Image (cartoon, rainbow, N blue to C red; front, side):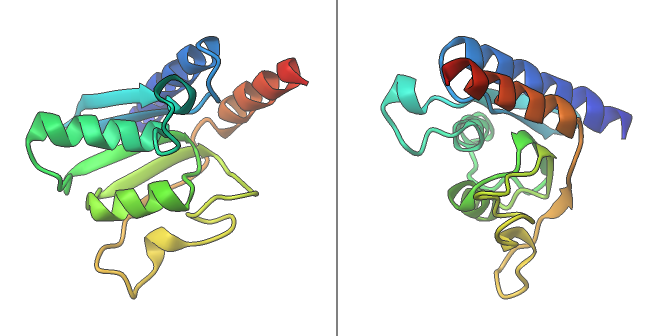
Length: 149
């Protein structure tokens, strides 16, 4: 549990940096073998890419580093519950475990709206640990959007 908190703090640092860049503050960290293999925040605006969510950017970087699209022994830490697109990418990458912070009631695909990662009809299921530093992750998002309204 302590390691989960430490890695989620790193994901929150990515989210904060992303907010400063004007992007929706979501951060992700991929840990493999106890070490951070990749990290990123949302880059949809910067890259003009609707798929450049923090999770996708992180998974792509980790796969390049490992030279393997399968990340079977990895844990992905994300500050917000992943959407359908990101949940699909997590399954395709064969990520072993997902740890996320805040729930996403309007589009979360892990528990809130859908439960894709635990769908037994799929070829891969992911271990899930929700709610790690959820209050901090939610506060960051709320502050970001309050500033823009």
